[in-house]
Amino acid sequence: MGTNCVGPYLLTSLLSDILVRIAAASDTAPNSVRVIWSSSLLVDTSALSEGVPPGDLEKPSEDAIRNYTISKTGNWFLADRFAKRFNPASVGTSDSSASEKRVVSITANPATVRTGIYDNAPRLAIWLAMPFFATVRDGAHTFLWAGCSKDITVRDGGRYVIPVGQWHPNPRGDLLHAMTERNNSLDATNYAKGLEERAEKLTREFQ
Image (cartoon, rainbow, N blue to C red; front, side, top):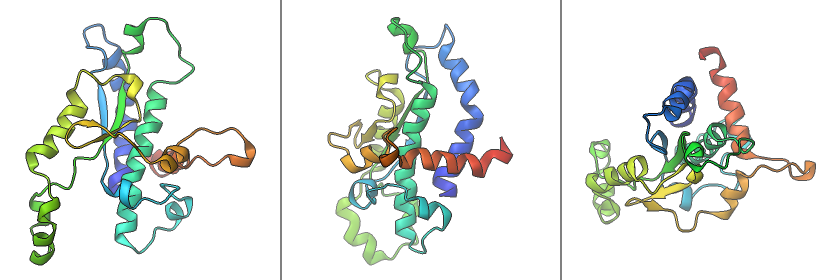
């Protein structure tokens, strides 16, 4: 969580004022200032229905895959939280160009890319996984699309990009529900907001 969620949360928080000023500048193209959070296929295949269970924030599991999956789901949640922070619903304007002079925050899964990170992995495991690896070129293309495509606007904040540069056609409904703002006291859990609050608490002394 520290490397994949808390660290990026702190960096984005520290840069937020600068990003907002640049996005609003008269010589900045609309929708061109973006924060891209790195996600993973495991969000689709292995994430828990809560996405980021509060108990795992207090006491992480000893299961490395579980922790990694939670952290990558957390990146999607933080992309959504920062999209709301950068573009609060209370700010309304009939000027479409003005509304697009804000920061875009989305997440992207570049696929399982065959890079040097697997150099020390068991050779048999790598051989078995070869059919599922994406090329470095395809992985880079996904992030380039997320960062540069003119089709992406602030109204896409919190959305999920998948390989090779396209919107997720069917993101998991339970995870979307876990990110939803709910005011009913009988259904008050917002796991994305809980992660944001936890990350804020952990990084407050550094801000």
